[in-house]
Amino acid sequence: MATGKPNSSSNPGSTSSVRSMTGYGEASTTQGGAHYFVEIRSLNNKYFKSTIRLPDDLQGLEAELESRLRERLSRGTITLNARANDASAAAAYEINTQALGKYAAQINALPQFAGKVDAGAMLSALLHLPGVLQPPSNEEERFEAARKVFMPLVEEACAELLAMRAREGQVLVDDLRANLAAIGERLGLIKEKAPGVVADYEIRLKTRIEAMLREMEHHVEPGDLIREIAAYAERTDIAEEIKRLSSHLDQFEDLLKSPGGKPVGRTLDFLAQEMLREANTIASKSPDANISRATVEIKGCIDRIKEQVQNIE
Image (cartoon, rainbow, N blue to C red; front, side):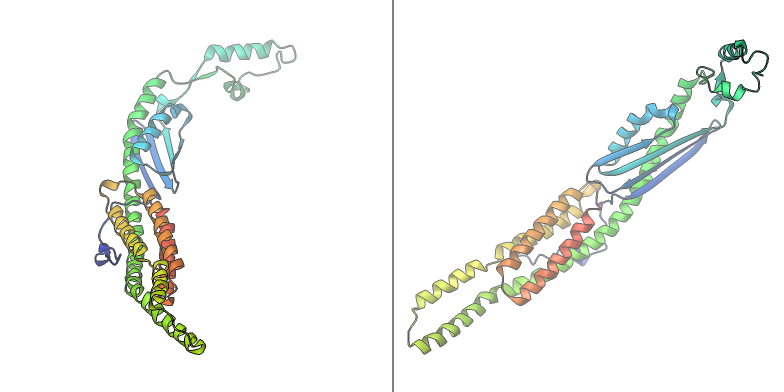
C-alpha cells in the first residue's frame, strides 16, 4: 500500500498548468485619431458570469465580446470595460438645420415670446431637442472600424489576464503541494501505527480479563477471547480508508499536472471533500492517541486545501 505521500513532494517547484480565477489584463491602441482601451478583470465564481461595459454607440458588440470571453475563460466573474475616444472630425454629430430652424420659428411664433427671445441665446437648449443632433452619417463604417480594433485588443487583454492567472495559479499549486506532502507524511505515520492498535488492545484485554477472572476464580475460553479481539479489529480497521486517502492524494497530484490549462477547480474541490470524508472516518474508527493527533493535522491541511481550491479555475 502506498504511504499517500504525493510524488511531487520531491519536486515542489515543478510547474503546473493550473490557473487562478483572479487576474487582470488591459490593452490599448490609437488609430485614425481615435484612442481605444480595453481592460478585463476576473474574480472567483463557481460559474462563468460576465459584465461588459461599452460606449452607447458600440453596444452591438456585447454579444460577440461575451462569446470571445467564454472561449478563453471558463469560470469566474469577468468584467470587461471598453472605451473609445475619437478626437477626429469624423466623430462630430451633424446638426439638422431644418429641425433647428423649425424649433426656433415655433418659439418665436409664441405670443409671449414674440420679439423677446433670441433663438441664438437658446442654442444650447435647442441642440438637446429631439432630432436636432444626428449621428455621423458614417456611423456604420465607424462601428465596423471600432470592431476591427477592439477584437484584437480583447485577445491581447485576455492573454495578459491568463498570464497573471497562470502566475497566481503556480503559487496556489505550490501551497497545495506543501499541504499534500504534509498529509502524506502523517498518513504514513498512521499506516505505521495502525497494525499495533489491535495488538495493544489484545494485550490490554487479556490483562484485564485475567485480573478479573483471578478475582472471580473463573476461566475464559480462548475462543471467546479471539472473537472479542476479532470484533474489535474489524471495528477499528482503517486499512481501506488509508488506501482510499492515499489514492485521493495521487489523483489530486495528477489533476495539478493536467496539461493544456484544463479547468480542474471543481474536481479538486470535490476531491478535497472526499479526502475529508476519509479522514473523518479514520478519526472515528481509531482510538489510538497518536493516530488521532495525526488525523487532526490531516484535517487541518485538508481545510487549507479546500480554501485554496476555491481560487482555482
